[in-house]
Every structure is written in structure tokens, then in C-alpha cells.
Length: 481
Ligand code: ATP
Ligand code: MG
Image (cartoon, rainbow, N blue to C red; front, top):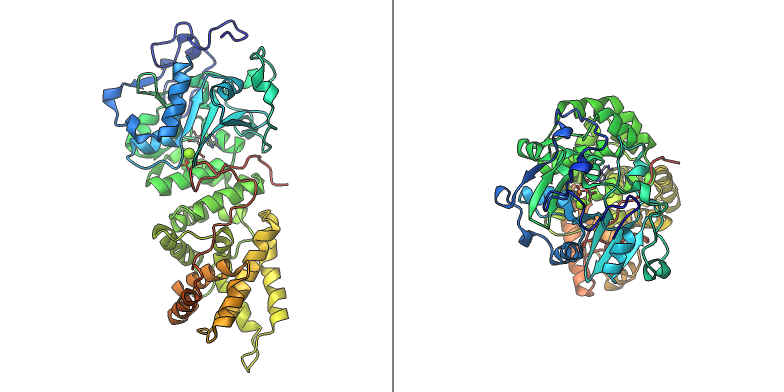
């Protein structure tokens, strides 16, 4: 198993037993982060007895992937948030694996796998109910040039059976991007996200000072924060998400860089921004994260078209109710999560379109509602179906202002594709005091009587690949077009 340089990748010459960090790897171009960590000193290794991460904490599928790679002679590490969260005693959202096996080699080891990404090929290994993402170490001769160096292309590579059937071709067009574990660690975003758990000897390898930052509970970019945020402005949002989710501090240089660079977030691509927002809305910590984004000046540049606070109902108040729902196990569909931002404004519009005799001007209200929702729909690139569900979900609230008297009325409404969204928004509106809780309860009983389940399906949009249940692949790409 030789690559172009003649080195045997399965058993790298001079590799320190089990760590995968050969002296030649360490001798490459070094760039010193502002952390004061001396990268030339080589990685810090925490041997098995010196850390709390146990194999039993990994999903059986992830373990299977790590062991098969290892037994086939490759380096195999658990990387990213999985290591961070397990060291903190938290349950990871997903597990990522990094290896020196090339994508084609990974595909050969796992029949149930698929290559994704054009430029940086990742392999998704499919199991029942879980996808393990396996990436080949990527090179980083200096700070990465652009986020495209990190992010793979949006497109999935067509299944190319010939690719895996023949002999492994010589190093080719993708070869330049592959690198060593040390390089792979340094191109990651924050020190606490760059720890590697080595399945060969159960040690943890720390190339960037992540262990001490984890102990100090600090989020710090790897390298100069200004430069790292210029490369990929979405990292600013990620820093604040981790701060709130983990209860960490952000290091002062990283904080200063966010306040200087916050405008840059408007250059991030709409799908990536929308992804970050939706993941946050589903996290159960949305109120805190959104407030941290707002205070940092990111919301006005990332989501300029989302409504602001209304008299009596703040966005923070709405998000607290969303969090409450998610924490108690009641997930909300995407259109309901986004529709929540519009609830208070919608009830204002209903008032504006209601005559003295209590009749609503439906056509006028629908027009006003479209005008209200359209700008964010366009700037966030929301699919038409999501827009339809948000608008119809909100509009249907006008038909749910009283406890229903006839079963037929309930049945007719409950058959509509948008009713589950309307029902979730009705629940949010009741929690916010915009609808009487008695009326909500009345509708619940009426729905139970006709045997409808009282929850919306989580309408995941097309093209989204599930990893662990509830986790979707991060969209790629930088600029908002
Ligand atoms: P989560 O708990 O939300 O899954 P995570 O830290 O695992 O958090 P992911 O988005 O799953 O985050 O990404 C996995 C890892 O990939 C991160 O821990 C980090 O090392 C790296 N990474 C992800 N996005 C970026 C980015 N934009 N720039 C640099 N590194 C990144
Ligand atoms: Mg993750």
C-alpha cells in the first residue's frame, strides 16, 4: 500500500507506536496559533488511563468502522465533537471518523457506503438508523486558503462502481488535498473540536492545545481568529453556539475578532445560514444561542429579514417556548419553527384585517401574510413547500379561534397538508398567550375524538441526508448569491 511518495500509508515509517504522529509529519510547515501553543513541540498524548473517554461510549457502528479500518492497517481516529462531548460527559450528536485510508479504500472496506463531495470526498457508511461519516485526513500546508478547502462541494458524487471495482489508482487529482493527522487537526475550527481519539491504543492526541482549553472551558480558534473567520464567517456563529450549548467562555481574542468581523457573516451562503438557524432551533437552546448571535451583531447581517420583537411578544419569548417544547420531547416541524418568528406579527395583521363586526378580510390578510413572509423566504432560500406550509399554517389559526363545535369541521381541516403546522403553531400561540389555552385544549380533545394524532411530522426537506436520527448533513458553500 504505497502512495506517490513511496511511503507505506498502512504502516507509516517512523510512526510513534499507535499515535499515528510520525516525526516527518511533525516536521511539515508549522503555523503558530495565537494560543501560545507551540505546535513544533509535537502533539500532547493522553494515554488511556489519563482520560475518561471509554470505547463503550461510542456507538457500536462507529466502533465497527474504526476497528475495521485499524485491522486493515490504517490509522483510524474518532474526531470532532464526538471526542469533545464524551470528554465532557455529554452525549454526542454524531460521530465523525478520520483516517489515512483514501476514499476508494474506505469504500472497499465497507460495502454499505457511498462517496459524497466532489473536491473532498467523504464516505458515508450506512447502518440501520445511523450513518458514520469517514473522511481522509486533509492537508493544510498553511492556514487553509478558503472555506472550500474545508467544505466539500454540495453535490454528491454519482455512484461510480468502477471506481471501487478496479485496483486503487495511483495518487491523482485528489491527492494534493490529503494530509497528515496533524494537518487535519490544524485545519479544524476550534481547539476543543480538534482532539483525536486513537482506536489503536485508546489514547487522545492533542495537536492544538484542545485538552487545556477543554479543562478551562474555553472556545478558541485554531490560529489567528480574524483570519479563520475571514476564511469561513460561519465559524463566528459556531463559536457562539458552542459557548451557549456547552456553557463555555469564548477566549478574548476570538470574541474581539467576532465583534470586528460580524458583518462578514452576510457573505456566507444562504443554505449554510439557514442550516445553522434550523439546527439551533432544534437544539433546545435556541433562545440563548439566538440572543448570543444578536448581541454579537450577527443576526442583523445573517437574517436581516426575520421579524424583530413585537409589543408584548419578543423573539426570545417565542424561542423559550420552542425550547420548552423540544426539551419535553415535542419536536416541531421546520415550517412551525420558522413560523414561530411570525406569530406575533401575524396576530397584528389579523387585527388590522378584521372589520367591526368581527369578519376577517381573508384575501387582504393572505396578501399581507405573503408580504410578511416573502422577504425571509427569498433571502434564506426556503423551498416553496416550506413557504406554503408557513403561510397556510399561520392562516389556519384564524379558523381555530373558537373551540370547534362540529366534528366535520375538525375533520375537514385536519385533512389538509398544512394542518400539522397549524396545530403546532396553535400550541406555540397558546403558550405565548396569543390564543387561550382553553381553546387549544378544546381543539386537542376534538382532534382526539376524530383520532388524529396531535403532532406534525417533521417535514425534512429533500436532499437532506440523515446521519444519526435528527442530524442532517451540513450544507456547503460560502457566498450568498
Ligand atoms: P455538533 O455537536 O454540533 O455535531 P461538532 O463539533 O461535531 O458539533 P460538526 O458540524 O459535526 O460539529 O463538525 C465536525 C467537526 O468538523 C468539528 O468538530 C470541527 O472539527 C470540524 N468542522 C466543522 N465545521 C467546520 C468549519 N466550518 N471550519 C473548520 N472546521 C469545521
Ligand atoms: Mg458533530
